[in-house]
Length: 230
Ligand code: SIN
Ligand code: FE2
Image (cartoon, rainbow, N blue to C red; front, side, top):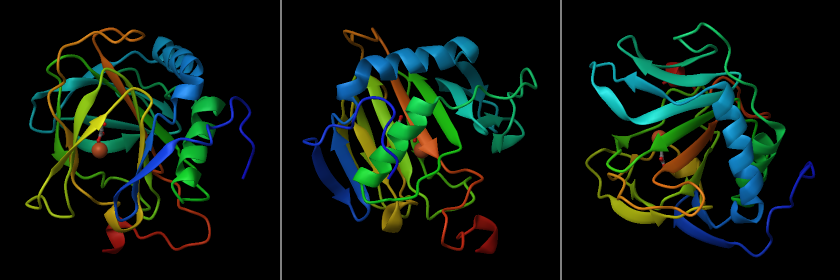
């Protein structure tokens, strides 16, 4: 493991098993919250939140930014990873070393070594914004976990099963929580209920979610289980 260049991850954080392969690292990002917020602000200065359309042409209620070699985008052409912002044709801002290392450390804390995220999607939820039940399925290597960081207002996260029809559980995700899922539940359905109004001491009336993914990078040492190979 590479030592973090910045704050060390807290050792005493509660690690809650949510499901097979899915862990909630409660308050994991709190120890370095100032750096988290400042670093995300830097990314947002270079790439402000964009309001995208679903492939069906409906506006997303969530604002989106990206950093890293790839970014997740949606418009009438579909859901996909793009190396550039479709509005400007410019590459996304580089993923700050701090964010990348934190994601690598969180994945390791959840039992996933060798994490190499090439995307950090940043979602902005304002009161009422929601994310429908979906699976993260546009990535090349489905063996690589998802690392999802919550900042700002709390939300009710929906955790389902491998089929859309499976029962859904409700989890509270709080400022500083990190959810990591991979292995047997990598393809679990998940979503976010409409954000309740409120004021967070640091972020005001919003929630940020950072989702780290390996979109076009495969985990070392294993054959990628590609979507196209299924
Ligand atoms: C997502 O699944 O893309 C977002 C999840 C979240 O906001 O917690
Ligand atoms: Fe997702």
